[in-house]
Length: 522
Image (tube, rainbow, N blue to C red; front, side, top):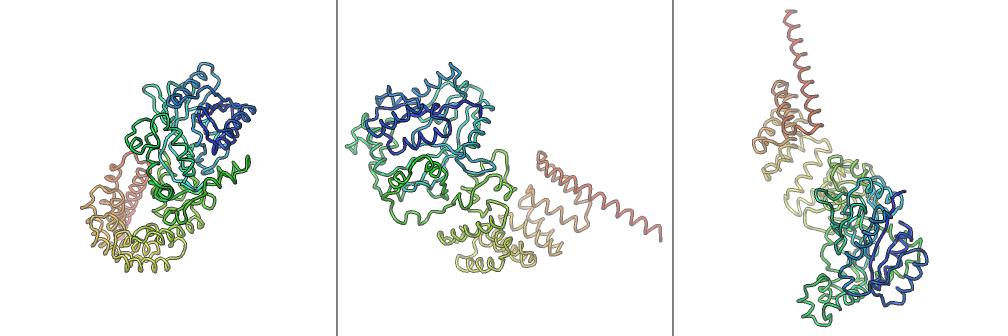
């Protein structure tokens, strides 16, 4: 751990989060590498805390006390980073607010606050030599200290030698012309939704120098920095806790930060203040993944879902936004599949709309040996909600996965009748008939599908397999040649097509030799 890292923050009267912030980032980077700029705090508790931690080595600057100093927060902290650049004191600078903490979405360990993978990532960032932006963000749910949503906020991790300037929110540190921002697996934990009374107090303090916070009309018409805070004065605490926008995705329950803070300090009062006053029932429609009970580990998620691309794919974001609802397992084990079955059942119970909670059901229950249960669930759903696309698709897939190919072919036929514009009916219908030995029917379905979707890769491959089974080797060979041209950069496809062509040529040669031998014998 040779990379030299400084962490910088400006705050005012953050009595709720200042001590946790100092303890946590002191653990990560060392107290002597923390720089705190106080913006005129009046709280005795905050001033005593700053004095205490200054004695432990934290650099505390009390000279920026005016509201306009907060207005130019990016410049104040940017000037300090420029000093680091001139003195070559640090390699990396991390500007944060007092409600912001760092974790990591480690490829092999998952979401964690462990110091070792966090430092390893900083070593990698420094070796890359470019400013990185932390794209992973966990915003805590109002009234819930350990519950978060996944959000798309960004924060900059600054390479000091490359530093030019910093914006107010630390989102987009400037980079040299012609360069691009780097990527990082670091996570920005945003403890943004503090208790409502603390939020209002903080908003008043920040806005008071610029607008009369007691005048609702003035707040409504205010257009200066901090405009996002003005809406807090027009909502109730119930609105704040229950109806906040952006919590439609699954929530992630992550106890790692609180667990680590608990080692350093008594977090009981902190948690109590955070969750006090939370309305009952505010999680009624919220889906939740507990990262202690079912950890999200990117490497395991990729192994369980090999169709996902490794390069350039944000696997955590994919899971939260898509995979959770698609019934994708977190790991390639029966335990992982059992978790999916439980999750899908939860979705069916909470969202009774005829589609959510059924996607991926067929594959999951089939792999768990529970196909009969799947038949009962899907038959009931079709009767209750009607012949919706998602339900019919799962119903047909269940028979296919259970290797009841005649039944699968029949179900895919019904699917094609109702949804002729969906390629799945032709691809899976052709495959089911092929597996049933109905080669003519399989080819007819494949040809009808290709007439509708002429460049569909998987359907073309299915057609080539049918031609091979029919003994139409010359046509199959020509089709494989055409398939290889559909995606010439796909190495796996090229290898598949090449192997198929070699095999077809071998079969043709064997056929010719057999025919020649029989003729000679006659």
